[in-house]
Length: 259
Ligand code: 13P
Image (cartoon, rainbow, N blue to C red; front, side, top):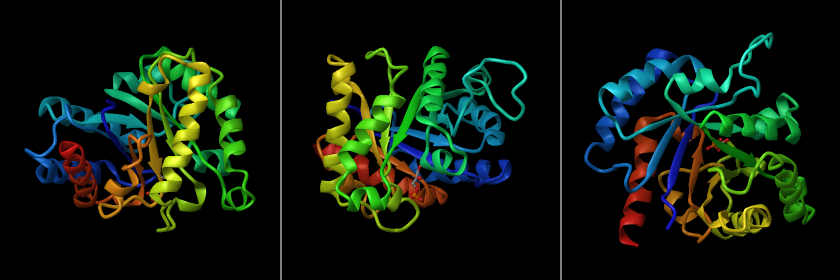
């Protein structure tokens, strides 16, 4: 049984003070409902908010994990503007998003770079959340499976088949559009991903958590996660409001505790 994982990707939103307010609101919303035996909740704020959030989470012993939205694959050196795995680990980070489609498209990150980032994360004891997903034209052309397989083949070059990773299926056409995939489409894509993981990590693929991302809301979260291979969600817009993200956590928690 894989523990559901709900990750909030705030993208380039929330100042430090807004992040702290958000955390206080979320904690109030979720108090007594959620604990990390049932669901892992992960927040991925901008880098600037990581350490202040870590201090509050640690001092109040909250059942919340911190994630970063990116990292660089070197530990130190002349890499202006980059941030290293060790710097993130010191800020209490345990997960890191790698290869989000916004970085793949806006910043031309290649799968080769993303594989290096994931490998550096694992080496530093962080769990990479590797993102893959197709555009609308690839889907309409009937090439979703081939696309996902190619992205996985290249982006998983680092993987030894047994270290902990998370994969997020985020169809680009569903991100920020209000047009989520159907539960059946999400399950079909996540099943393709798990089959591909088996090729490298035969004994471990069933333990890897695979998330769906793209217009997840409190209303559709439980349905989207109903497929056997969908183990959680990576949430953008709806995670910016503490009440909405808490609603997603509650919906998934209720579903999980029934079944
Ligand atoms: P939305 O939830 O806003 O569609 O964003 C999804 C996403 O990109 C999460 O990484």
